[in-house]
Every structure is written in C-alpha cells, then in structure tokens.
Image (cartoon, rainbow, N blue to C red; front, side, top):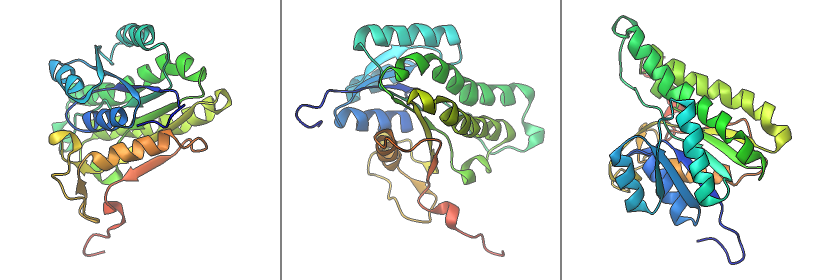
Length: 239
C-alpha cells in the first residue's frame, strides 16, 4: 500500500498476458498503483478482473487503436504517470531457413512496432508528470536461442530504449528496460518456480519487482537491467 498522503500514480501496462504482463500488473496493483491494462484477448480481460486492474481492448500494432485506448484511459484515470510495455512474443527456436518473411515481419511488428506505437502515444502524457516508460525485452541468452525475427524485434526495443532515453531526458521522461531470462508463465508469476541462481529459469515475480524498482528510481534512464538468475554470467563447458 502507498504511504499516507501519497497520491496514487497510474500505470498503463501495454500487453496483458498470463506471464510477465500479469505478474507486473498484479504487483503494481498490490503496491497501490492504479493499473490500466491493454490487451487484444478475452484472456487479458479475465486476468485484469482477477488481479484488480482495469482492462481496455486494443491492438498495439495499430497506431489508431493505441491512440483510442490511451484516450479512453486518460478519460477514466485523469492522468498517466508511467507506462510498462510487455507486449511481444513470437519466441521459438528456429534456424534462418525456417523463418519465412511472414514470421520475421510478425515478430518485428509485435515486439518493435508495438513499443514504438506505445512510446509515441504516451509521450504527451508522461511529459506532464516527468514519468517513465519501461519496456520488457529479453536477456541475451533468450533472443540468441530464438530466431532472426525475435532477435531483431527485441534488439530494436533495446536500441530504442537507449535512443529515446537521451531524446526524452530534457522532458523529464525516463526510459529503461528489464530483460528477463526464461520464465514460467504459470500462476501469474507465482512462487511455484524456484528462483535459483545460474539456472536460467525463474518465475515472473522478480521481473515485476525489477520493473517497480526502476520505475521509482528517478535518476536511472537508458538502462537495460537483465534479470536472468545470473545465467548470463555462466561460461559454457569447453571454453
């Protein structure tokens, strides 16, 4: 809960699914934030109801849809202080020969284009409150074990974070990303999965904690925080 006298801040979570979007939204609601979650699916609507977030239907791939849903959120909430972008997906382990043009374009669209659309639309709202934009991307060992489209999409988000952080700093907007390793998408980031160092797999709960921490860190911008149980520090056998 928020301390006495502290005004509730509103957070838009763009991309509500059963994994990180759910865990982050639930943790934000529990911490006392007003949570306004966007998804395209009925599953997202149910998740929002279960965790105490308000749900909005929208297609983050379409700039017009993003504009409409943000306008609806501001109408209902009155203000937007932070945006957490969790949309993405299209992970699978495939070689270049198995990645056709449609898969590549879809992975790029659902990761990079959605982040661009949300960042551009949220600009005016966040600048009013010196707010923050936080993306959820992927740890290096995740996208390096996927395919060209997924790597391009997540890589684009990473480089947009660096560029936008410098561009938007004079407006008081902080831009960062949290880069998870492989996570369990069960139980909305519950504690059923042990978070063991060096294993490369963990629950989505620590991702939510990292997001909330970086949202509240007023002097941090342009950073990619890897939350991967230390897997990136491991040296493969034979090297």
